[in-house]
Amino acid sequence: MVNFITQLWTNEKGKRFVVMPEEEFVRLSEMIEDRGLSRIFREAIATDANEPSISFDEVKRQLAASRRNRTRMARRNTHKGKISAK
Image 1 (cartoon, rainbow, N blue to C red):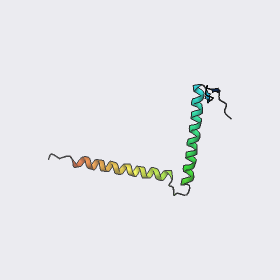
Image 2 (image 1 turned 180 degrees about the horizontal axis):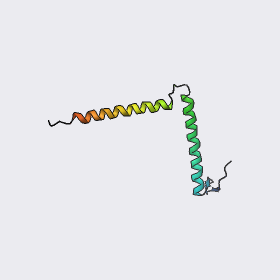
Image 3 (image 1 turned 60 degrees about the vertical axis):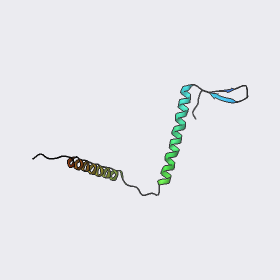
Image 4 (image 1 turned 135 degrees about the horizontal axis):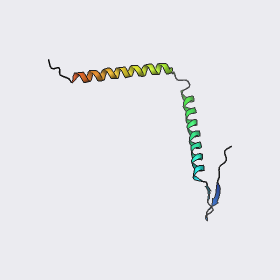
């Protein structure tokens, strides 16, 4: 359990407010965000659990091949615009 330094205030209309130091508010906000992101991550994993997957090595291989192809295409396009002076 996490403890926060808070105060409960009530205004003249009876509405209640929680008052806390800014550092506590930031810490609480980060905790809420972390839990929200964790939930989203767990849901994404559960959703994709039955989908086909590829290994990290395969991802690296595909990225390297893609990079090589882009480099080749860029070289071809560069050479097309040049006129050789013979």
